[in-house]
Length: 230
Image (cartoon, rainbow, N blue to C red; front, side, top):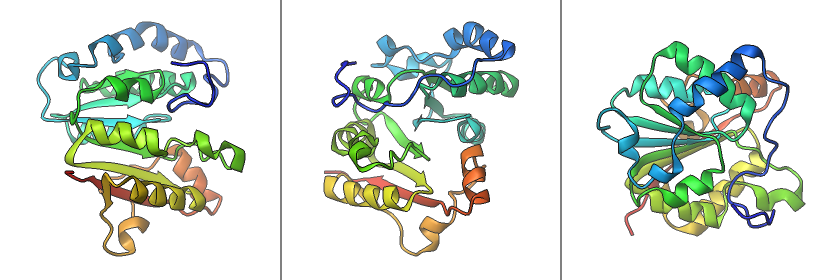
């Protein structure tokens, strides 16, 4: 990953927050090596799972992992790749992953762009980006994940007919995403009625961040896009 802050792929935020508790430190040391998605094996991601998967799904910035765990439990025959460079989120996820007993999740603790650049073309059934950092100051908008180079990466990795989902409680970022995806031309917004973006996705478990947003009176929006066969 380049050191030039204006040419980085996806991650600009801090790597760690509060000091990790003992159980979290143990999880990072003991479990991350077991569940880590090895970048040098990215060209054959199916090989990272003990048995062949019916499909692969990516979640970028899984936070505390609530949705990723629920999604993986719902689709046990799929393989899931979760990306989260924030160490505190990764540690919490590892603790909960061990409790869940799920074996169909692999975790990547670096910039999502590094992974997307190495994955085989059209290998993903879908990718999720939920409540990403909105970078509200205008001078930081170029740091938002949804931008042409990252949409290029997603379009290459998601198969035609596959899905890109985006959720946010920041109206400006929602509008930004709709405009950026439309201009890119590789994805089609699937909404047909207002409820399609007002209602959560099927089987949506919610997240801690979403609960706080609702408590503060912010309204989430749920977008879904289909990868177009060009």
